[in-house]
Length: 359
Ligand code: DOR
Ligand code: ZN
Image (tube, rainbow, N blue to C red):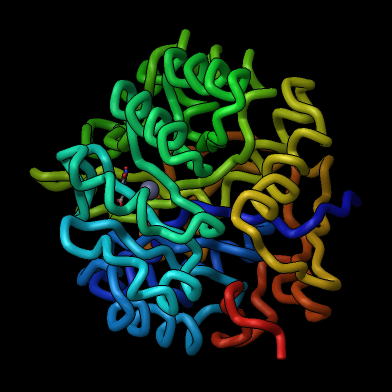
């Protein structure tokens, strides 16, 4: 039996408010605990989007009632809410600011660089900024971090040019960190036919699955990767198989077995796994300690991934049928067994906001 610190997932879509048929704070945090994750940071591209103190209250009060693991909630940067100096209370209650600098699912987007500037100017320096920025817009986002002399975290990098750019920026002392998702480590565009089973929407995700050369570049530059994050983006099977399929893959229940399989195959060290799923995200997102919190895994158990055994409401996984090695047996959160042998052991509402002090 292997004991790991509780995983921290800084990139999760929980769909509450507005699309709880896909997921909500209860089902999503249940999936997290089953996956060995004890903190999720929830993205703001909900309906309505989370972008001010009122909408933040809506998400946080749902989370308070329903979350089973600990959580934070991002605010989204929009064209009209950059006046953060007057909204410091909301900023400090959030996980950080999410900036959508490329097109994506949902309404939040900043397509003009003049709209980025006031956010970089006004968002408190000690609070995280996460950018969804692909390729050249990522280069621009990194330039902004340098110009405004503040840290930036780049979400879900997937291309060789992106990891090389981040490596170069780090070497020059720019405060940039990044995350990679399991689907960009374990899948390439060549896998789309086997994920889709004739439903092309199943292979849709943003950033798109990349080439084998891009995937290899991620593995070759493991030292540049700060965090592994799922970008858990649940959409139902019916939605994925529809005429107009939304992009996104679920990932909370598969990240740890996939990474443990890579450890077994000697593609990854256990130390790297712990750094990138716990130590680095805790530092980058300035998260509190979770005392008496750990995950127990049977690292020798081999099993087949089956969506039907999961807690996520979306009902499918791009890793269906994959043989993995390493089963989460037990997740202990703040002294309580929260998940054990396939069953949840804590009630909805047990989870805490990571930005609220313990007392
Ligand atoms: O594939 C994606 N799905 N990429 C995103 O950026 C958004 C996400 C979602 O919310 O479904
Ligand atoms: Zn995302």
